[in-house]
Image (cartoon, rainbow, N blue to C red):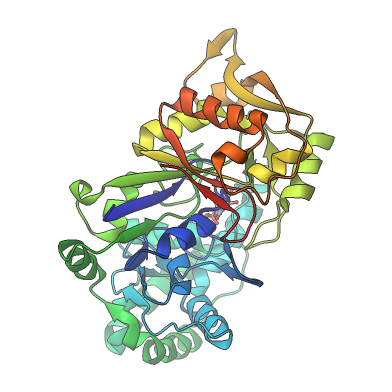
Length: 424
Ligand code: IMP
């Protein structure tokens, strides 16, 4: 498939990094289309584990051009650090390309992100405090500073000084913070300009050319459908559009260019940060999922909230993304449970819901309705063929296919590249 979008179907942390890395083997260009260093992608290659936040997972495949698209927000210090980390481990980063239209995360964005969260108190979103929301806010209010601005010191200084006047009022008068000075920020960021110059490109043109040459392109989403600013559990969402539609805007291509939309779903479900989560397990089963699944955030190290697979949410993800197929990850984690549950509907306010509720008020009241499956209670981490999976595991997958109407084309049974089953 020439152009594939890889999208999270849950609240992020579905294992998109591993899936993108696998598909990258036969890809020519892999582009991140939204988000910033709020995303954590863990990719295991042989004995090595790479934790990436901003650079697309495709960087680990030597023939791939990894690209950071215009829909992303870039913290230059983090980007350069990540590049240096990869280089120090023998990964070539010279092919990386970054859109000059991507917006910069500035130091005041990080400071505001943390200050706003404190101010919200119990209503806080539980952001990653990386400045993502404030950076997107500036983008849409048209006060943002883009990567291309770094290469014109006069314009950069002008934009920064204008932004800072406004930010300092907010920081000092509303959030009780110290004022930030322009000069150290100018020095710091203009220094990044020299380092980043070779990587900046017209990435929309780059992807257009790749598509026209029949190359294999992957558009890698960060976070997940339920964290989407429009389609997620607003306001407990991120500030961009992880859903497949966001891929066209964040990459700069038209929707007709997309051939495949692969939804990545964990065999159970997790969430970090605040917000409604109907199948959350606040008991020893949830604790067991955290322990066996290693459910701690790649970026912030926070413990993830865990629960049973939610088919209402998964069917919603199929719909809003136009998914063509599913990659089911971490199936091996469920090997440790005698009984496995799947949420097939919600009961809320006297009604049964089979579609994901659009009203936040309803979502908070949702009580999951479960179907129960027998577990398989055996190690499946070395299985490589669907037919060799225990009957109960096959039934679980077939159930997902029947109730979503699409196929599960990839099954992951462990963190390494080889711990994967491909189906036609
Ligand atoms: P922000 O993206 O840092 O503004 O955080 C907004 C919400 O999205 C919070 O609930 C975060 O925990 C969540 N979030 C952001 N990035 C990720 C991710 O990569 N995985 C899971 N949750 C995320």
